[in-house]
View 1: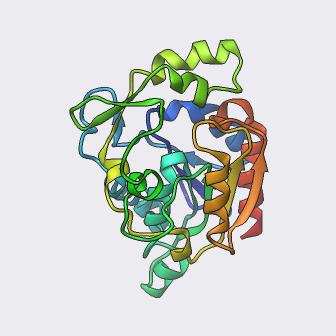
View 2: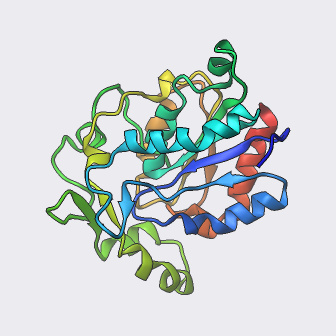
Length: 256
């Protein structure tokens, strides 16, 4: 991958979902001349290796991937879907275009996109404590007792509520085998949207049962400089509204 006049998109995925769910969006973006990198999360896996991993580990992996590309002169839009917005915000610290320019380096993050993104409203608190008083997970989550979380049958209803039966049959058997690290939601998050120093866009999903639309709106409004875009979609917007997601990224790239 060489330096381009178009930014590369680096997306932090959400928990329990393999990176392959973004294949359609990646292909559509590529057709418009954009590269999109979506690694599997270190904190979400099927083999137990994810236990104890947190947003900090995801940020470290991101920096390892983007640094040589930035050094080659590439700029990035960093994005996060669902949980992925937590490490996406953290990843920007010291790695924006202006940050790197001040150190005599090329490239950097130039903008950020949150898609139904989780966030905390004050720094150094964990997500579970901030939104659930540290008491309980959503109804679709069960703890395995070994530091990981699994989805139960409610997840198909809450995450795939607006998907057709064929799509549910295609993805649910795979999704339910993944486990997500408890540490992702129980470890302190160092940054809020108000720490951002680059343009920010929040995509609110209006038919989302997996992460309440009202919570998304609260997060988006917590940072007045954040531009808000609405899509009439459930949580898995990449499966049902591919073209609209691509349009969001292209509009962000063209605004910088």
